[in-house]
Length: 157
Image (cartoon, rainbow, N blue to C red; front, side, top):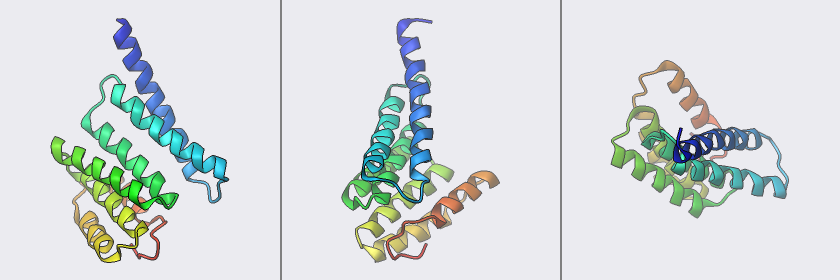
């Protein structure tokens, strides 16, 4: 393995670790202000490491930007949530991703719009996300659970 290969593998391991640890904090009912800062840092770390990871694919980038958007939305940072939801959607579109990744890109946009009190637009995105055909039953279940989870800022998903 060359030095570059070793570095790419390290970034891959760190991306997976940062992603998993983000979910550990994000899943808590209550977080301190310091933990809110930490969960955001972890999400950005995951995105950074996926950019440099060995064998990274467009789906990894889309999912990383989705995670950053989700954390911002949970924290009530609507503009940043929307910015990263649009980054996710751009990766999905450019790579021709569909199914699971397309549904999540639309879910991210819906949640960010809800966070910004743009309820009509958010509702339309929820409908679009729900209409995406996800072939794998387990992936569909995961998506529907995330779609049902808050916060939705008054928008019923």
